[in-house]
Image (cartoon, rainbow, N blue to C red):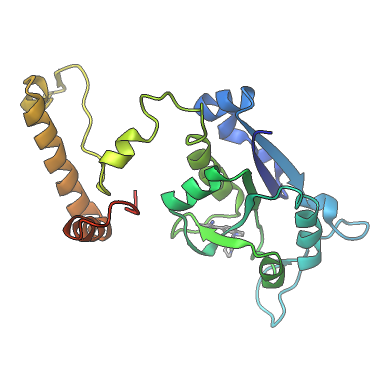
Length: 242
Ligand code: JD8
């Protein structure tokens, strides 16, 4: 059985969405992964299929009920060997290490919240991981789930050509990429750096390394500090952030 994303959402029509195109879309057509949605509304209570209620302690908005979410999670719990993840701005930051771990398993169960979020008790009771894709506010978990899935699917066996597949990443040593150029050699008065047209492969490798280091230092002091500490303590070969 192929790697399966089980997605619990009030908006099942948002999936596979953009992941039905390009690399992920071809992989979906080739059955290299499966995208199954579970409509949270179908687990709602009463004639109105209610999924939410007012927050205990007061305040604005509505909260997704634990009994409704529990019933939905129970209906997909046969998917063992899959991580169960709730996308939330309160989660720990999602990393490439998480993505590698998810792709190593049989799939992921993704809980997509709306309103003010999900009652904490069901997340505790079902040991749901809470992760965030970044420090900005989305209207719900669906677009975050699409981001997580995009990152997972490209790592699945057979999805990417062996040329690209994560080989560069292991050489990057936790640095951001150097800048890319293609033809024409001059465009709107802007030239491609001479060294890239020199044919001197050692000089090109040196220039790219310098550019990677400069851009990482300038834009991502957090990654730069981690890189320096990894390269100082040469025993650390894995676990760099990107
Ligand atoms: C899930 C509802 C809407 C609106 C509080 C939580 C992730 N990196 C991220 N940013 N935003 C989300 C995210 C937002 C969500 C839900 C994920 C469910 N909302 C907000 C303001 C009030 N809720 C996210 N991962």
